[in-house]
Image (tube, rainbow, N blue to C red; front, side, top):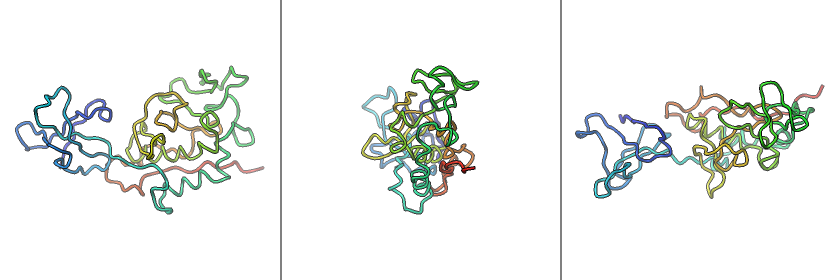
Length: 244
């Protein structure tokens, strides 16, 4: 069984080496091409053949881990796949409206987290007004994203589903679904500008002043690296509050 030695910046760097107990004097797997690298039991990662940091170019390359290329487009999965089903629920006409402006009739209001500030200047206790006028927790690791600022309900509904699939698939809340390329792929997010949400930027989508119910913690995520995609844990689609 392979033992991975992860270093800081694993995803960003392709120079982390793989050590295999009892294989060679230093335990490093050397290669000419990626086909020379063994398959990993952990389905979150694959091995690629690269030069290590500061490694001379006249030496053999080494096998290093890199995150597996996983599509995060619901169309890439069967219609009855949990990802595709949740996407359909989150983007139907009843749920889509929840991704729009913070509306008291839908449970939202100015001053709540992920909503515009009251009169542009004040928020609920514990929150602060960001430069873009949205109320947010100043201690949050990534910004609360307000749907109307990133394309509106028609365009942003379901991005939370894509991101949650990636978070759970890789057991890492830093993963998002980057929709900026020809393929929608799970990647580690970069930067905290809310405007980059959906295109590889970090952020958590808020609906009507609360974190989208699509998101879950990582308790049921693919942290062991052996879960099938259809077993990855997802939350539930936003729903309109019941009328009194």
